[in-house]
Amino acid sequence: MSQRVDLAVLGSGPAGMAAAVAARRHGLSVALFDEQEGPGGQIYRGIESAEAGRTAILGPDYAAGRPLAAAFRASGATHHPRATVWRIGEDGLSWTSPDGGGEIEAGRVVVAGGAMERPFPVKGWTLPGVMTAGAAQILLKSAGRVADDAVFIGCGPLLALVATQYLKAGVRIRAILDTTQPRSGMAALGHLPAALAAPAALAKGIGMLARIAASQVKVFRRVEKVELLGEARLSAVRWRGPDGWHEIATERAFLHQGVIPNVNTTMAAGCRHVWDERQLSFRPETDDFGRTSLDWLLAAGDGAGIAGAKAAALSGALAGHAAAHDLGRLDAAGLETLARPLIRARRRELALRPFLDTLYRPAQAMRVPQDDDVVVCRCEEVLRGDVARAVAEGCPGPNQLKSFTRAGMGPCQGRLCGHTIVETIAALSGAEPEAVGYYRIRMPMKPVTVGDIVGPTILKEENHG
Image 1 (spheres, helix red, strand yellow):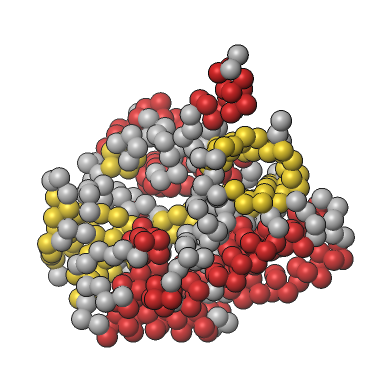
Image 2: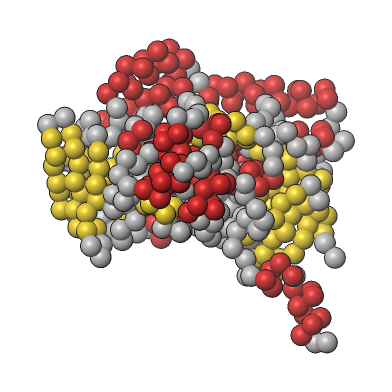
């Protein structure tokens, strides 16, 4: 028999924890599901167990997650760690974990799946020794492990943050290849006056860049093209700058060109999504409270549009209060009173985004591969050339592309390749990304066994029948 709660929350990052805390304030029963062992999400990963030395390296923004995690623990919400949610719908969701699983009914569902790093499909990006900057940071947060002599490649605040954290930890960085486009700096200046509403965030960014500049790390700017070389594993990085091609030997490279909303769950649910041209990604269409086009579904945090950890927590709180209102536990006047300061604070946090999104807009050559031998779908090993041939034969979008190439049919259900495929088809066909569309994500959303789908109760009855 399935359980029932007022609110189910997917994800225990800042948005998910804040949604649970807010909903519990109004007496809602809350169940939170997350694939990690403890609360925190990617941004606050391991926050409850991080020792002082590691916290000092990761900085005050990381430490800020500790009181939020404590508030979540004290809220009375039910926490399901190491849980994989593989189905979501109006009637609730299905999940599995090493400790069991099953079905749960919910009056409302908040998806707080956070962000994922934008794919960086260049030659050699699937070689052993190549990972994303976010993955390198996860190793530091979860295990205190680092990699010496890595080459950092790309652009965006996270790349500078991880490089700064490595420097604070005393780790050698071989080089930084900055792919920021020169014209982006000029375009971003128009958004600087609005960004001044977030002076602390601007000062933090300037401080990170200053620390990198003061270090002994070589920084190569205006990088136009990148190739990762090697046979069995990475052996060198080759790049083209304003003065031609260069090469540097290395066994490790960290790639990054920004983050995008992780939309697979909301796409699977079937709510309306829009193409955000400034952030070059799809996101669910929501109101100020995170309500989507489906009455039962809300989306909070970076999964509804990249805004950062502070804004994510604020949007999670708004979603929790909205769920309480929609379920009859909070009247309209009470909701307005609680929401007004949260909305104002979130808008202040969002003031910086147009500046950052414009300054660190990734170049098309880094998002859309130009060479036919570049892998675009890692699960099914589909090449850019395979996509080009399918488009030439009349393939209009990613769902039809499955029949041509199997792209998006692997274990990740297109989560890693989705935006690359969309933008590649758009570039080849001349269509706009929103017209090309996204994958139709089918259940199960994550790889699970037949036993997970059938359910532990039925299996137990059969085994003892």
